[in-house]
Each structure stands twice: as C-alpha cells, then as structure tokens.
Image 1 (tube, rainbow, N blue to C red):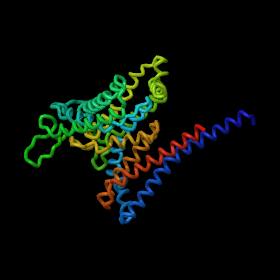
Image 2: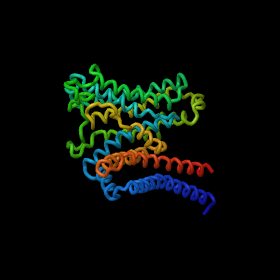
Image 3: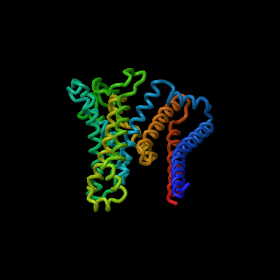
Image 4: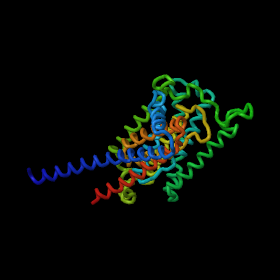
Length: 364
C-alpha cells in the first residue's frame, strides 16, 4: 500500500474516532446526570421504584403522555433552531423566552379578532400562527438593530427584551381594555377568553387522547429547511463567514449588518412561532407566565447542539420528555420537579467540559 493510502486510512480512522467521541460524550453526560438524579432521589428517602415509575409514566406511559412530550419538544426545538441560526452569524440569542411571550400574545389577540374564526381553508389558525411568528421576529429584530447601530451586546438586549415581553403579557391579561376576559365576579381569573375552536391548531390524530398537533410536522419541515440552508445555501455561507470574521466578510462585499439583523429576525420568527403553537395547540387561552421557561430550555438545547440541527432535535426530544416525566414525578411521587432542572444543568456542564477537551485535542 502506498504512503498516500496509509495517510488517507489514518485520516479516515481519526475522523471516525472523532465522530464516535462526539456521539459518546452526550450519551455519557445524560447517563451520568440520570445516575446523579437517582442518587438524589434515594437521598430524599423516596422509594426509587415509585419515582422512576412516575417519571416513565409521565414521559412515555400513555399516548397522551407521549403526545404532550412531543408538543413540548416542538417548542424547545424551534427555539433551539433559532439559536443555532443566530450562532452561525456569531450572535447569542438568549431572548427565546421573550419571543415566545410576544408570539403567543399576538397570536391570541389575532385569534380573538371578530370574524377570524369564520375564515375558510384553515386561514383561521394559519394567520394567527404567522402573526405570532412575525411578532417574534420583529421583537428579536430590535436587538439586531441595536447591535449594528449602537454596538449593543445582543446577549444583554435580547435578555432585557425578554423581561419586557413577559411584563407585556402580564399587562395584557390584567387589563380588560386589552386581552383580559370580562370580569363577572371576584373569582374571574386574569387571563384571556378561550380562543375559538377554528383558530386552534388541528390535531394530527383528531383525538384529544393523543393530542399531537400539526406543530410537529411543521417543525420537522423547518428543521430540514434550516439544515439545507445552513449547509448548502449562499445565505448560510455568508452567515458562517460573518460569524467567523465580520471584518473580512465586509471586505469581501457581504452585507454584514443585514446578515446580523436577519439572523436575529430569523431566530425570533421561530421563537414567536413556538409561542403561537403553545397557545393555539395546547393552552388555548393566554395567561401570565404561560411560556414557563421554554425559552431558556430552548437556549440550552441550542447550546448543546453546537450548531447541528440534528443535535437540536435530539436535545429537544430529551428535554421535552424530561419535562413531562418531572411533572409526573412531582405529582405522583413527591419528588420536586426542580430535580429535572438540576439534571439538565449537569448535562450542560458535562457536555460543555467534554466539548472543550475534544476541541483542544482536535486542535493539537
């Protein structure tokens, strides 16, 4: 065998080993986090079988549980995909929570517009979905404009915009002049009216016994589109060039400022769509705090994916099923659902540390 053949064989083997290492690290991190979680449950004095059984029932125990986990994964996946789009341009979008909030609020307002439920051909639920997505994109676009015009760090601006959006939702459901349902007595909750049935996102199965919505195939299509866009399109190449070296990209004639704003707008569109799907596909009325930390969990999913759409989908499914299992474990076994948050944090720390080690090894 020639020297070149030996060199090619060594490179291929090294690449194969690198792929195995990158697959083994997340798996090992998840197993380690679950092991620590089991130890914590034992330390609480809760029977391990009861806790694990409740977790599995909540995550996988019935068609309803699986459907609820998948719906949660949809929201996490959309935010995570938006995160890696911004990350490709060298940006860090931590405003998923605010983009979800704005998207859900605007979608609710559109669903309650008189005559919206009478539109034909599915427009009754499609238009609010699009409205929520556009609202999220515009909300993130504010941070993009601040970035290119004033040099404001997008981590700070997107985070602060999330706080503003959360309080806007609170204001909208507290004021009868906005979205709060009419008060009939002192027990009337501060929330919007239920959205009409035609504005709700249809179920894939047509049955509430297995309430997977059309948000799942929509997210799959978006994931495929984004993977192709980032890997094979001119826009994806320009985003990558901007993220690697914005000065060199500008000298090459690329519209760097437009790319930066566009990346954040794209990320916000997906966050807003996630909020609209949560309202129109699961909750059906706007309440304060409806986003429930999905934006920050989606951020973690995006961080763990390290720029990979496939990684986002895997992380979203993992965290979606963990959320469902944690809720069930708290209700049935008395184990605080905060334990799931601790396990998620452990996964992040372990994968981040391992990724740093692998990157240094690859550089050497």
